Image (cartoon, rainbow, N blue to C red; front, side, top):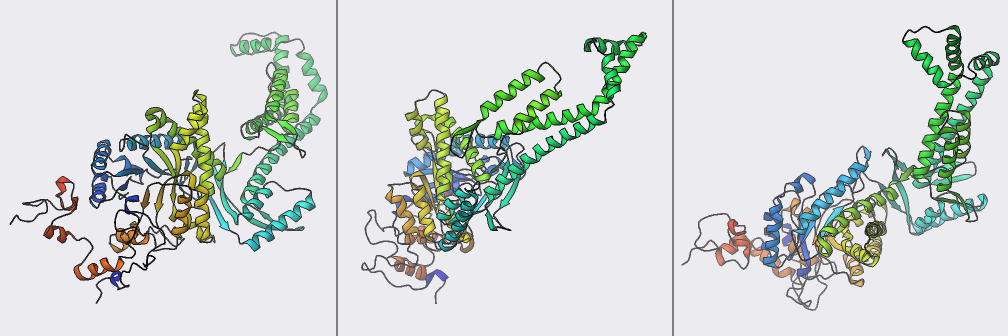
Length: 640
């Protein structure tokens, strides 16, 4: 009787069946190119790395996903792991702690949060540099906020074509596309639609989820994608502010009509020829209880009454000025540099608006009353004609810029310190983030590299040198399991392959893990539904040869078995050094019989009895796994 679920007989080896194997994915990767991560839940990374090195693993990823755990790794341990790697000829890489690189928290976005993330990246890069002083150690970072920032859903071709026809027909009736409809069409032709996105108030950091909507209007059903709705939010807010200014002006006109014109004229006459300085002097004398003559007292009485009459009007001017000032601030910060008309000609420049407002201020506000009618009218006429600024922005655009700023800043700092041997930043894709897909990830990397080059140019570094450094130091950790998780939104199997092709040239490290598209299961390849053969071929087409880290902690967690034999079978690794048969997928039956007859694969008892062909049977004091007991040899057996 079989003594375990993995021990069922599945046939025997034959060299005539190179595709044999229940878990075989069709892809072939040599054992030496495969790596594994240490446990990310502990700071004892030396022990974790030693366990992997003892098995002969030639590529190891160390690190911790929680910030406090990563911070608990002593700096000396990185140097010690480097020595272990040098002794065993192992390639080391790092997985940094998860922190949002854009600056988001549960409370919203804040620039200080982004700067802290950049400082944390630099700290991790400096530690990673100690693992290998000779080359660019790839360091994985997640650009992952504490909530989904965007969500794509798949749209079948027939449905997409119908939606495109509806949009185009409405555009013909209106004489042109509404804002964002051209982008909707582009996405639909790619077979996708944005279902939701986080909107960010760039001034306050406030966040709000905006979803796709279909509304029924008298002219027919209309689709509003999230970005179109965000534009409507900006437009409505701007128009509301303009309406508020107009209402204040109307209120001022109403108050002016209620004013007693004769009394107002008399008060003004009493103050004719009296300077403001003289009036302030009289108020000071009155406070000091000095005697005032009748004329002086009349001046103060007239001034007090005039203020009472003018106060409501001045109050409306004050509120108008405050509103107009805030609108001008929003336009200067979040408006476009240029606005063009329907013919493509520049109709408005932000710089021209700034100059016009400056002239109005110098004419009426700089030397006079900042709440004067002339100043308010000038500002109102200039600002009320402006188009609405994009104060609220979609998180995919906003986060892309902020992640690029953080990544470029950290990479540039490390480059300045370590030169061309600085560690490589490899941002990892993750569903429902700014790096959901291969296309999205490529955009983030391009933006990050551009920001890096801009920093370098600002310091007088030649463009060609800066560009080469950016391409070497900033790239992607491509996680096949993460992109496969988008299949829960209806994307087909080929989507994983297509997105891999779009990001292939940017990949610096890969995470091989399997799932069924609904959860990050961390199964070994071949146990889920990821098309590894076709996806891995996309990297090979571009000549991409990077560390392949197999994340299979799900099998260890739930079934307490070593995933490596399954990995070797799934990825068709050759049994010997050269890429030629026999392969591990063909040899499944041979080590299966070993499972059935003699217990677990490579048991400790085997090494105790027959001696160890590796370091795994060394005492723990020497980096092995055996308990510290009295021994007469490294294997623990007596010398007879």
